[in-house]
Image 1 (cartoon, rainbow, N blue to C red):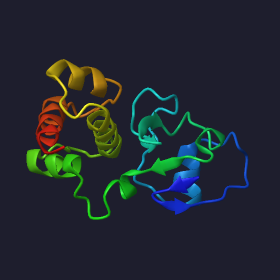
Image 2 (cartoon, rainbow, N blue to C red):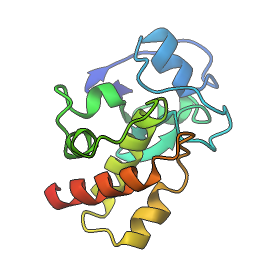
Image 3 (cartoon, helix red, strand yellow):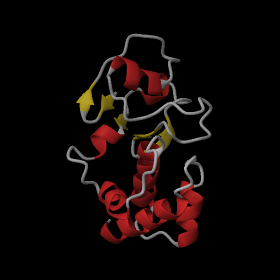
Image 4 (cartoon, rainbow, N blue to C red):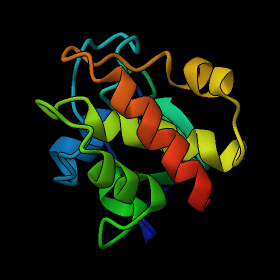
Length: 147
């Protein structure tokens, strides 16, 4: 697989969650472990451009594919979604934010002009325990203006 544009080889258990490979083997700790069941979205990464939950996606499922983590979204942190996140001042505790950003980036990649309902539906699988949903929504709306 390619991770953030770099070819990688994995010789371990093919059933290992992609999240563990990224965090423990490659040291890419931006994606977080939350629930372990794919329900909270903290572990969201892109596989071939689609948002997936790294905790329930096996390394085998990512074989021969492009994997992008928050570290690879933009080398300087200037993806339109990342800029919007800063401008709107979205994070409170910040734990879920990499997953939120990765989910929003995939949403806007698929639908660069989302309706309000598209944003609500597209972001509904990511949980923010701090409740910054209004700021998340505002940042996705702002980023959509730049995409």
